[in-house]
Amino acid sequence: MSERIWTAGLVVIGDEILSGRTQDKNVAQIAIWLNVQGIQLAEVRVVPDTQDRIVEAVNAIRTGYDYCFTTGGIGPTHDDITVDAIAVALGVPVVIHPEARSLMERYYETRGGLTEARLRMARVPEGADLIPNRMSGAPGIRVGNLFILAGVPHITAGMLDALTGTLEGGRPVVSATIGSWAAESEIAGLLGETERAFEGVAIGSYPFFREGRTGANFVVRATDPALVDTCAAELGARLSAAGYEVVKGGI
Amino acid sequence: MSERIWTAGLVVIGDEILSGRTQDKNVAQIAIWLNVQGIQLAEVRVVPDTQDRIVEAVNAIRTGYDYCFTTGGIGPTHDDITVDAIAVALGVPVVIHPEARSLMERYYETRGGLTEARLRMARVPEGADLIPNRMSGAPGIRVGNLFILAGVPHITAGMLDALTGTLEGGRPVVSATIGSWAAESEIAGLLGETERAFEGVAIGSYPFFREGRTGANFVVRATDPALVDTCAAELGARLSAAGYEVVKGGI
Image (cartoon, chains in turn orange, blue):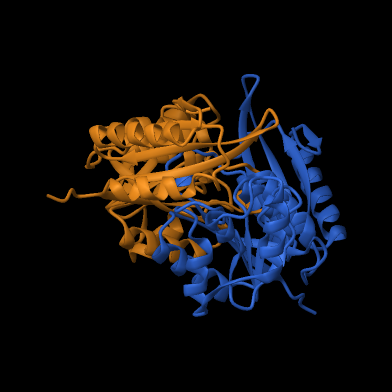
């Protein structure tokens, strides 16, 4: 019986990532969180703060995968255009969400009051629900299979936390890592043969050069934990038989 | 006179990025390098080690921008399928590049000799040139407007170094940063007005919470250094006039 695989794509919105000014941290954090939900991150696109480019990427991702996440561009300033772009992508108007408005009013009550700029953060594509934000004022937004998150990593993390357990997924991918002081070019054949012998398993090979020596870590991945264990044990046995030192858990 | 803007897209190839196991470092490093060449990174796609997905992304990026870069998947193992996928994308066969073969022979002369797996790293899409790799054996590959680079960041860096000054570009984007201890929601109007007053300038707003206080850095970006200086000075003056402390160079 073949298993239903749940997939997501991520659109990272922000000139600051594409200029190299800011090192993205959300891809890895969202990938790891999604896997716990039983959803595989299948594609990421990084696009600038430009409406057409956001619309194009969001439409490709939301129709191509089960879920579409976006990060960035939901603040109060002129370069925060994610909500407007996504409304265009969905063909719906932008509206003020009454609950978001109340949240903003309460949040800014002791912080100078709700201004026009701050009210921008209560705008959502019509039909949207809010994603709680316990770190700062502005909530995230869920509309259909689209999840609009903040770009600042610790705020993104809080929103992911609020979503934990609410998305339908399948079995998470589990992995086992084996390290070996072998040049990967020496054991390429052995690796490929081992992968082919275990259907549903992917083996990644990640070479490194450390302490003056060449080595590689091999990551065995599948949704079936027993299959991962069996394949990792077999790979370890084959590497040992070929004369290589094997380090369980990786080097 | 409007300036020709040169653009590039990047395809990051690798299950390890999409699983969250590996934190990507190449987007930022390539973005910064491209800007020095006068080329703007306009889009990034991260795709798995799957031929169809690589082909689709590479074709979208190489036809959508002046240059297409890829990172990852050019090693000797079964999960290194970038060359094959790009050959499919271009509709050309994969051939052994004679110079790459010689390089591999020399490199492995004292390292156990050239095996079938190692010879894989001399395979290129027909019509390709090599990009020198001074860090390890396998070269990068240039074919048309496509640049196929290694995924391991320090090896990628060496290949970028070898390409420095060889790609046609325009004027680099320059930037000036101004920091202020202001909530960005307080100065959103001022920011937007300042940006609109300077055509060709983009102002990014990057809020932070530090030492118990709220602040933001504003990055003024354009290809004209004089315009950047004038706009940054004007923004600083407007922030000061509105009663905010301004820190040149950012906080």
